[in-house]
Length: 445
Image 1 (cartoon, rainbow, N blue to C red):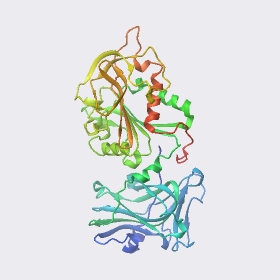
Image 2: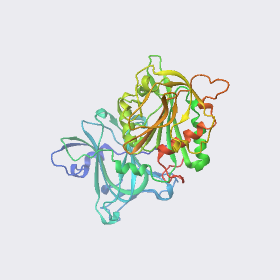
Image 3: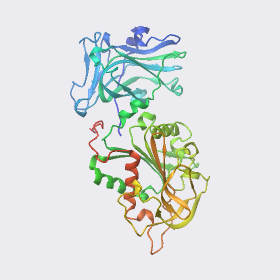
């Protein structure tokens, strides 16, 4: 989900010309040094605006109009988007760096902020939410201050531009500043669960992020997505994939993973298709983001394999997993027919089968207390679920290894397997049955 964004930049000279009180909100007990600021009352100062329909009306400078002399307007009419950017910044982030802006909103929405480095590369980006103050319309209220603390690991990073782009909603921005703040201050968290609900509005398409590991094609996830598209229409499911690879030094990597929890929140379901936790940082930010994602309503599907569960470095995620992890080398030959343990399960909807498939190799995992079993194998659970916060997790203990006998079919070759996976993704996404066009999905150019 394509969540991408635009460009904002300003001159250091203009920056230093702006007063401290204009650059940062009132804050007793916090000392600040201004790194960069722009007050749009004093003119656009090198900022430019663009819109995806190549018209000028979406992102514009308001020369007066009752908004304290001037402001930038960003709006999203007709499923369009707009952005504003300035490329005349040359500063290094200090300790306890904060980005501050003032806005007034006429409709709740999301703003993507990107700090740019040399060659227009993104140093850091995140989404923030905005909304009207109370029930009043924007024209009747004053500007709202918003401040966001940047990660300490960015200290010393060089910033040459700022880019702001709208995802939905409408707002007027009057002031923006980068400051270095010491003391407690009034800095808000850059993660607001209430605002995150805007990222997954009811009725939009199901957005899925798949971490594709070894033998992921065997699981036939593409067939499962086609099953859902046949059910909900072509725009009913959107899929983004990132690729896993094992390195010579026994480490692993994936091609990309969301850099912020807000970026991750743009998806409804994340699928770990035989990947280990090292590749996306399960013991660091990646795991923290994934847990926040599920806790606030996201869905997680875990599939088995040599890089999953006991040998998958999943310990930081274990409280979310419906199985008890048994440690490394937990794959066993079971050669067992799969059978339903809950015939009313939503994961088995539309599956009327007498000749169930077999699982040849599976992880030796025990079902946690409070978790639910949907499919079983000899003495164990094959497919299990549990809730975590407001979200849902499904885990499959089976692997796509081995050959079934002549009179049997392996589960991944079973004609009903994509139906089970499709039902699972739908259940994890917690979406209504009727899907509509995603009103907040940015059109590709």
